[in-house]
Length: 388
Image 1: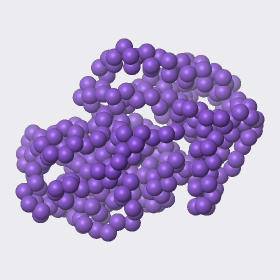
Image 2: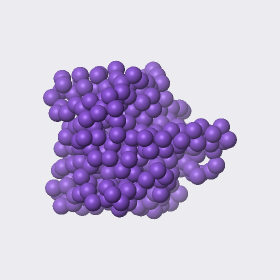
Image 3: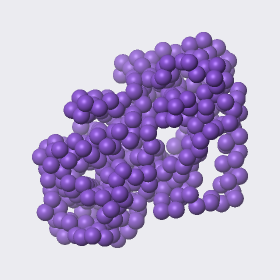
């Protein structure tokens, strides 16, 4: 009998298990694949985090998360965070109102940033070319997380605290016995606990199949592209460049030269619904046509505004995400069984605040008081399509 079983050893499940182990709970962390792996949403070398966000309740999770990331660095003696800063560039006509809202929220909360007119961007950030149809702001607080090292570090610290990790164990059924007992049946055995946290990413619907609840979370793939830095710009200091978000009726983001030497990740945030067990299956012709149009937009953006990059990507990879209709997380109890907790639908922005999310889920699993209003993350909320 464990105190808590956590299903899914991605970044959300791992932080949940770690917080519980810090509080001396007896915790089992299960994952269906051999660890480490590249099958889930936490794969890869880098993730982004910053304070500004279009939704204030998501932004409010970041300060505590950054404290936990710093604490994990100190405890482990491992560098996990690259403090690069963050640059947001927006086309005024299509996105100016959103930028004004985000700046207003940062002003209210004392978040430092520097504003730039469009023509000032290139003067301050080498190899960028924008005119005054655009505006920008730079946040000192933006950072790149070394994603793979974050996972490996938190697994080690969790084990050092006495936690148990079992990989290659696929959960076949979650069975509530009573309010103090729930079992997890896997391909290798049956485990009992007082409560269970389901942080199983794109497989959440499959795991919840027999629990009489429909979770509005859809697995999706997103293509990421890496573009080589032109030789004339290659002598810049490593990491001496912020990560960037560009908004112009659509959303593009980039990371600095870290994941692949001499390359920058620049991606159009275009998602295609997918089967998580067959993520590379060929999409429909309609999706392929749309993807081609959006890739053409991305290439045009690089050619027109990012002159420090070569015009064609060198590497393209596929990543999984789990989307909700409104792009907000689900952090809630099962409606009928309070010892089954759901952490789902992190929609491409769960890695940065994962330490705070993990603490929330750990508190739900142990009936502790919460520090945050969880109504925006309710399973039964009214879901609305997000606006840019």
